[in-house]
Image (cartoon, rainbow, N blue to C red; front, top):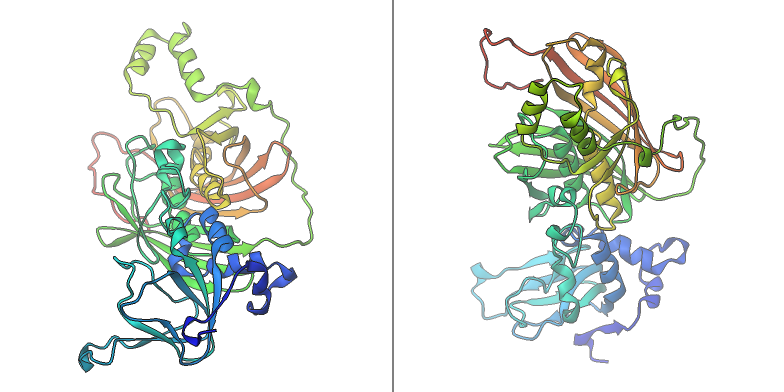
Length: 453
């Protein structure tokens, strides 16, 4: 066989001799895990990476072999699995313009060229093994969104559109507050949590999913400005990966998040928490139905009904059904069922981002419940927020959110939360502390927004 062409493996089962440690003999899993470590591929949907794992070939080279020649056709995307390769220009190139450098594991070439002809020479420095994605599968590198390879965001839930980020470069993403998204005086805290987690998720391999996150809100965000998410790779281990994300506007960090990701594994299991005895969601009203009843209920003053009818009502992308009536609004607790509206792509990372987004809805307000009184106006701002994911979660299936506020003091309210699926499994645990204050009266001097911490 011609040494310059290398030796091509024709099928994935032959990868067992190449991969250093294909645990459990799962060659496809080992290939998927490796590809998930390649920064170029991490922003792709998990389904795309799995299809790439099905499509790649393997080529081996001896030291000195040409992997690619300047001026010759490129047959695909090359990703280095093991060994080193050198990129160099032809000998006639000026010395000061020679782009000589070494490619190592996870580096790639043959992608992003404007033609099928390679512009430089690539030679093996040592024994070299590469994955090659043939050009015929190049479309897998150009998905419609970070969550779905084949469908645009408009075909899916508004929440999926909110959580779709624009990759600017490796580890940097841009997010927006969409016109139909819930907006308050500042960027909704759940949006920052969900989008930051989305950015972090798109820098780890698709076999690892988030199991915990801890967020701190620093400065109120502006709904009219894009948000830049910078991901820092704190650690990449065999079973765990850790990411820190900074959300920025106008060059200032407004929010930080640290998330830990884990590969699925078997272990000890128990569950002491039990799902409360509440009505199923089918027997409860959603927010739109509650609003409609209030607008037509003669027990409410006509002035109130007319005023409420004139207010613009934009349904939230989360459908919510409350388990208690308004008589329970003074208790430091709240139970409600929720699920995402519309269709979600089948990506486990997306579903965890969706529930992270939803977890901030009405959450800190529960700490104000015991203090509510007629004409009392308050405001609250999230300070920090933590989530632990115990089991897989489907955000477009009904989940019960159980919220309690054990304490409020010093202008801060503390809340805890648990989320159960319909089978009674505890899927998530949460905590949050929020700033809770009386709203300033009209006579008080208003101040510009300031950092909270």
